[in-house]
Image (cartoon, rainbow, N blue to C red; front, side, top):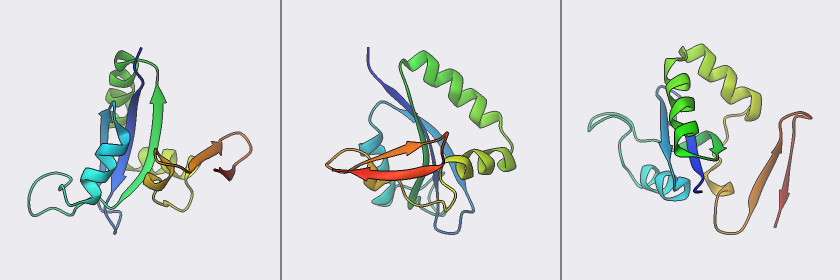
Length: 113
């Protein structure tokens, strides 16, 4: 069974919040960081992966995607702040080397190599 990811990307001014689904979060994050526009040409490009969840099936991920896309902006911001209060880019924490482990219950981060 493949893992699926639901994610939220934003531009440098936090103007747009893009909710998406993928089975390859690392490649999606890199594509957006390399200039793929969030919506279409003329819109800002995503520069930060600010939220992501790992789900165990595509069906679970699709259900979660539907829920997150129905959220208001304020609800999405609360969700992001719960796990990423400073809206830092989390793309460095996926794949290749360093992994970011987040303990949602205790509210702290630690890095392991």
